[in-house]
Image (cartoon, rainbow, N blue to C red; front, side):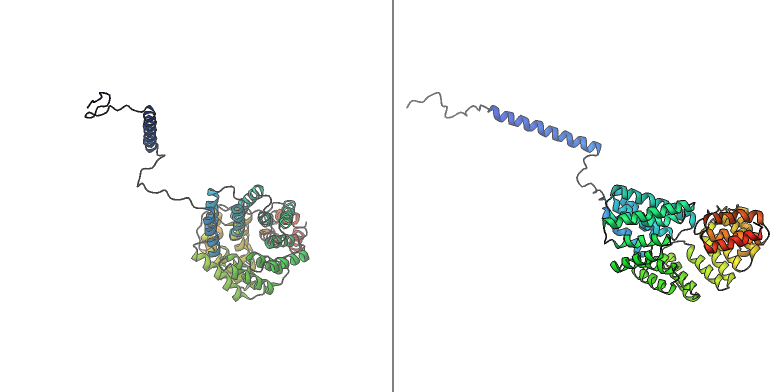
Length: 435
């Protein structure tokens, strides 16, 4: 048998590598090295987390903050509700819906604050709602809330012209809201509120009733209709509507204050005190130091001739905020009603002109036993402080302090020439002073 040398049988065949396979292997090695380098670099820079490392806390959604804000509002904790809206804006700062809701709650919370804090919060609400409208000009709800914010801001305008201009802007915002959605009941309700503040009673009532019929399950529609009734001296009906609003938002203390005020107009003082006490209790549960329920209680006792108890409740209000000029004005009213005219002067002075730390101690130390020792900044003339101005001016005039009385009375005359109550008091004071 002939065996060929070309095919060895008992020694291994020499392997001849395939060049394509070598190329593929080389590419894989380079890729693996690059991947390993990126992992090592990522671990060093923190871009890549090692296995079994703690998982990062997931970012909360805007909706979760909105739900939290709504829950706080329902509980009557408007401070926490505002904070939740602000947290939502940190997640999505250009969310028009959040900005509008924040402005609405800020506006309502302002009703529970003293005038200086109230105006600051209303300014913030106006800034937020203007931003919302800028971001989403076709949002009917945003325009509606803008009407509300402008309307409530108008009460603190520096001049009558500025107030009229704000009310006009508020009305235009409400009209825009309705034009974008003619089924927006809140827009109609806020428009009714603006019309009422423009002294258009008939139109205001018609729109308020329409809004309520369209949306009977909203706190706002009942509140506005109650406000219309209250402004037209229908106090019993107003109480019923405020109570319906309170059934929807049972922890909103503003509503209980309004119910109490209407009972007080009917001289049902026990009922009034009951609702003021409810407001104080809700605030206490929520840890809110709100002086307004105690001021309302003081006014009620004052009207019933219980001036000592009224003064004690003013003291409680001052314990919350000893620099509150509005509370000093309320103290002046208590003294005035008790015919302690001389005692009312320093209290009114603190409210209107401001007073030093020493003057607050002189004003309050003897009658209330307080040693405050903190300065107080006076209040500007507006719808809510006018009563302090013309009462103070009338007392000064009656006590022959005309040099101080006339400028104060003249301010009221210039600002409220069409207010019959204010002008009757002003004119009497000016006559006494020979003006």
